[in-house]
Image (cartoon, rainbow, N blue to C red):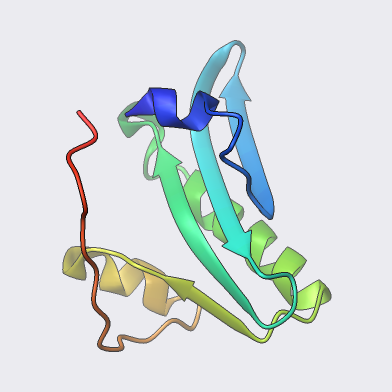
Length: 105
């Protein structure tokens, strides 16, 4: 799965990586058309570093960046158990559909 992030065709609108020394401990990636919509594609925090506010800070920085650029709508797909986390930022549930076209493993 990690190899897909090394693909030169993979581009992002905005992303932040957080390191502890050489160790990647947090990452957020956003794709966007640059005008109306942005999608927070990945928010990941290493399990040993969860609960320390890293994910919250990554979200705050990303939302601020997108608002500053007048992006109208920000979307994120998340598991139901994470709803309280995302509600803190103003996200609310909506119906959506998603289809996986192949297995990445």
